[in-house]
Image (cartoon, rainbow, N blue to C red; front, side, top):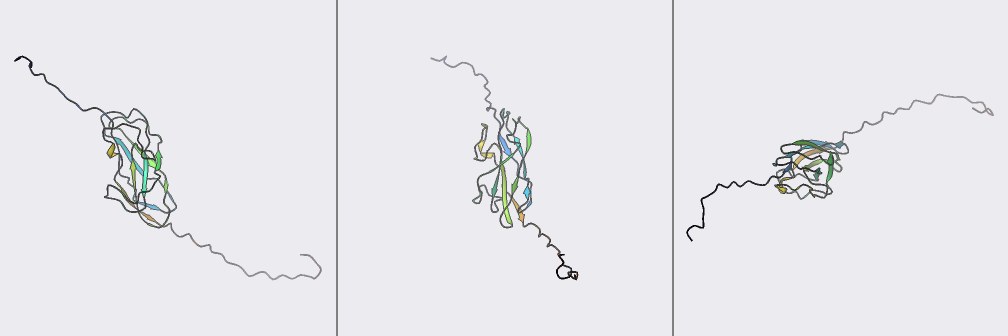
Length: 171
């Protein structure tokens, strides 16, 4: 019974390889009500493997300020698709810019936006990742202003020119 164990062998344990998609915080600072804006985010694969498949990203908008909070009570649905859609497979360490188109409505004020990598507009991802909890960027507060006032038309009327007519003659 004293020979059940042999000499020790070195064992190396390594983690599995997987992609990990994150979105950078949008850089946009301002927007104007009624004017199409184009917020962007860099989608980065910080994982140790390629995504091997294409995937979708989305823009999430909130009706109030949310910067500095992990969750946002004023976030609205549905989310907004981004381009390219879908985004091509992304290698380990790769990065691509995602762009959304959005028009703010309502009153001027502070709103928030964030991007979510590998999340379609239903917040469903397609890529198995090493960390599924870090796909969305931090919230970014932006100032949404009223559009500039439209110039009022400058209409002037001139005095009518006097005319004379003769009875019975069409003019």
